[in-house]
Image (cartoon, rainbow, N blue to C red):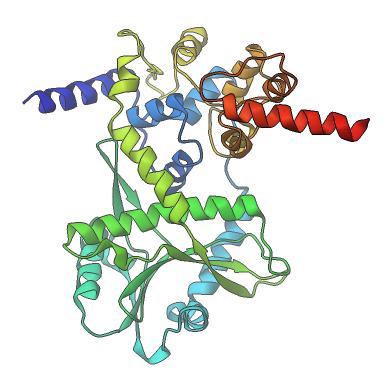
Length: 376
């Protein structure tokens, strides 16, 4: 009974944080961005409450220039249509080479044709049937609709394609329009695609588990399809998303158990944008900014490509004197050391290490000693 009460209090507190602001639904890109900064309490609270971070950032005067240009969207749609043309014939060619999928054993289902209101139920039926099939019949599912629970709310997700591979394995296929040049693609673009594909893998594994099947039937290797070199000829490669899956699971668990973060908040704290009749926020900017300042952010330069609040949090970090913040990967490798100033202070001994930083401080002092020896 007490557990139910805590869950009810938890939901009520998140609703109070959102106030009169309509709940923002999560799509795959937004969920993938959660995994990009799992240590940020501010983001976890706002996403858990369903706050529209883009609307908040614009109201605060710190809009983030996210989103693709119309040209990029058109190019991406044209490339996806090319890959899926004639019943995914081009995709099938690549899957045959990449996964050993025999052409003769492949079926094609366009789930979108049944109508939007039936897509999720139809997807469940098709996936269940495929998972129960004792034969190794390969199947391509175009426009399937999956779901994932985000802090008690259902997010609807549409992967590009799900391929049922020979041997009873499902593979998520992610089609992106960034180019692979001489076998190499932009690492940041690949990382973002991997995080998004991991969302689909987790959603499909969750569906299989709900249907009573082994969730590991869904491979952690996703098929990434991109244009090759400067032509539009598609090329496919396998991307291992196990690391992204682990981070995503931790962050989603953290969002569904926000009690500790909520307990640290003042009772009167609210992120409500107070939208007017036209939907535009009316809450005083200073009041909203103060509410956000009362939560802890984990800003890093990486946020500039993943979070709508990035410019607000960057300005906050600069106001606090942190103008030389390290990227998250470097920060994590240094045991949580956040800035260049902190690194230099630990290295020359002018700054005492915080709890847990003793070992990294010793290593930095040794590195500084070696540097001085090399210069003399």
